Image (cartoon, rainbow, N blue to C red):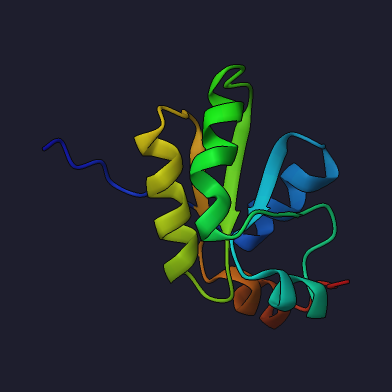
Length: 108
């Protein structure tokens, strides 16, 4: 099996990309966690729904996708699922929501 390495994006770069509207930000946490707090502009696609999302996205495969979770684990699993469905340009937010908040950035 061909293992691919995970590529990460730092909070500062994600903030710049969000401002430029240059990506799709996927929050892979549960709906309840997402509803509690999330990064503005993120869409909630829990791990259990990612394969279906990836199938629909693979038809266009347009642009950068960043996955995230509370820290990093589910974000990495989400990126792997997207990669398994042939999505390109997938990054993981290094440190997840915790890193975002620790940097003093706002959540909704």
